[in-house]
Image (cartoon, rainbow, N blue to C red; front, side, top):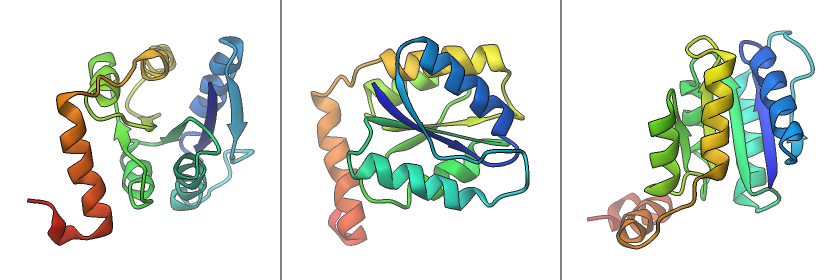
Length: 151
């Protein structure tokens, strides 16, 4: 799988661990940065990964910041992105199965590296169930076009 990866300064160390784990598992990783723990603004990195996902340059994205919340908010501003902040395996599986999430956000100050690795593995391996969930995703997509079209 081709995966875009980025972080902010708080998530840098965990991003590096996630990158190594993904590469070891045979995934193609495009690292959008940063290159150090020097202070950066997370929306810059979230938007780069989100645009790559929305533009289908990559299959999925993973973003890491202190809590994962800011990255999820920023990434979800890009049409076509369904970013989910997941702190456990169940959340990662459900984000994929029911919501077809295409971006995972992680909080480096919330979870440890072993749990992060397991969450990433679940996010990458879990398929979208489709079926009854698709009508709901269609309503979410309609919100991107016009907030008044969803009922």
